Image (tube, rainbow, N blue to C red):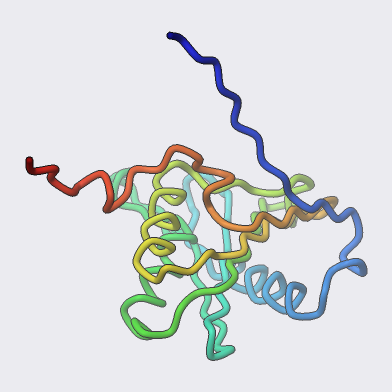
Length: 165
């Protein structure tokens, strides 16, 4: 029997920053400041990310490019690596991502690349905690409850279990 299934997800969309909760806006502002520190001499596309941990600590990260392109790192992986390395027991509860060019904030919201989605998935799996994902541009902010919406058919630790008879 062949089945056709659909995958759908919901998100909250905000057109004005005044509509956002203060803790969400605080993360977006931290991510914007982080984007200003990005090293993006090749693409001129700066990305900043911030993570709020369960303790309330906010950590930031930015993209870092390299002339040998595979050697760079995205802001999302930068901030999560920082979090895991320095606060391994403190779970991330929210992640904000912003992007800018030489003209300032991008009009549309940024979206994590596939590698970053996989890293966010691994962090949710590691901590057993969904991470609220905030994608913020100049004209629009999306809030998504967990990476499952952006990466619905995840490869995770369950895929690595060996099924013995």
